[in-house]
Image (cartoon, rainbow, N blue to C red; front, side, top):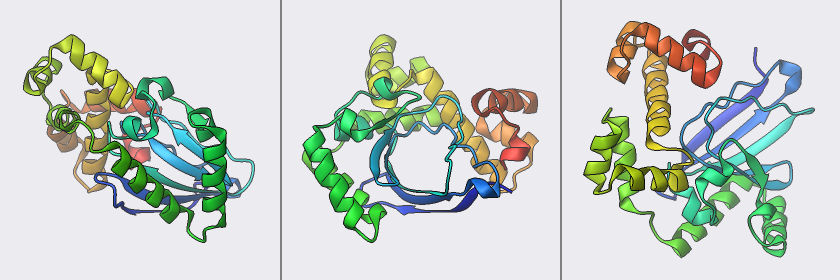
Amino acid sequence: MTGDGGYEERTALVPGAVVWRRTVDPARGPAAPVLPDGCMDLLWVEGELRVAGPDTRAHRPAPAAVTRYAGIRFAPGAAPACLGVPAHELRDRGVGLAELWPSARVRRLTERIGESPDPAAELEALAVRLADATGPPDPRLAGIVRTLRAGATVAETARRAGLNTRVLHRRSLAAFGYGPKTLARILRLQRALALARAGVPFAETSYRAGYTDQAHLAREVKDLTGDTLRRLV
């Protein structure tokens, strides 16, 4: 048994984003791990607005009491423009939004969300306003994600984006929090998890997700999550 008392998500009004809710109850056991996915989240956690940066490794929430979360998970590369911070500055970090924005603005937002019966919907409305104010992200970012997800090399990805590899790396750090090689590993992990959870045998999962063999898949899952694929599924 895990400490997750419930998790639900739905497609957000912001393109590519997801609105989610989660309850973690330590009395039910350790929480399920949060796995790296190339995304950043804007969170409402027990009366505080926070930002979760892009992860390179899995981590588990460790609340001392029942904790309720609401959040909006932006598509890879979309959050930095909305939040006004390069992704690499928040890599493997979670910070209060007041560390990034003026405290008076965060205080007003905190009060509004705290008074709402649906914090997740208020977060979504905030994300819509941010997206409208900043405009759509560079379309090349989504193209980079699609190309890497399809298994292309870094050099091929740079060519298709019309960039040299050095510029691709620099832009990837700002948009995704890490370079294209690490992003490719994380996207491949998510692809493998989706296949395995859909019931695809692990040997076929490794082939379809782009791993050399099942042993390669097992090593990558262990390195990025600290767990086995079977336990994660």
